[in-house]
Image 1 (cartoon, rainbow, N blue to C red):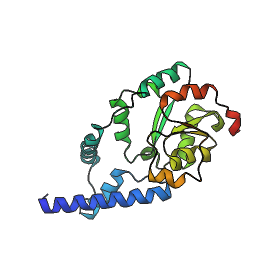
Image 2: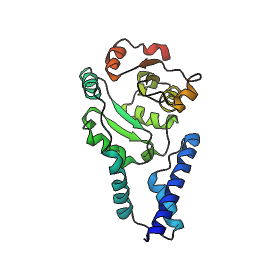
Image 3: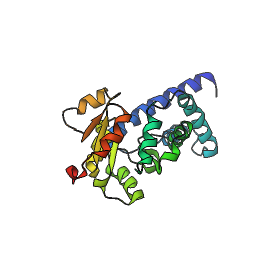
Image 4: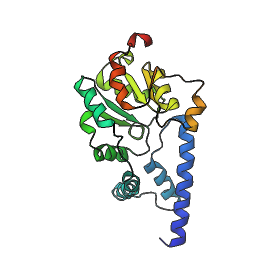
Length: 212
């Protein structure tokens, strides 16, 4: 592909991604990066591009950002404490590429702590849609009021938990964002923590009856 066409393709890809990102925040339907890429390729005359070509290309793109991700220092001690206490743990992530999330989980070596890693890309819906949280509950075969969601977004994690009948614990250390500020007066978590190390102690005294 010539330089001018390449730049034009990349510009269209970015615009299309941005458009779908805006759309998914109102519909709570996940449009995967692969889906968007296929739409653009079809417009450029390549409607039958093979996954064997597209998946490695996306993996190479995501590798750039994966190299920048680091695990929080309190994550491993907290996960260890929770597992030793007998808690069952899962990850439910809003993300447009499932393979990217799975690669990140393996990169930081936390997969052994979790019973499952679910993404909106794999299920087609995003938090706060209750369907994605119900998928986690179905894995454990537990009622919603015996589960907790820990997350940093009010409009996705905490609202999603509440719509599902779960308690929502808001971790606030990096939560001062425009999206969270927009929900600050309408969405209230069941509890707040500043760091992950606070979580085991909070759970010891957490009263599930408050959300029954």
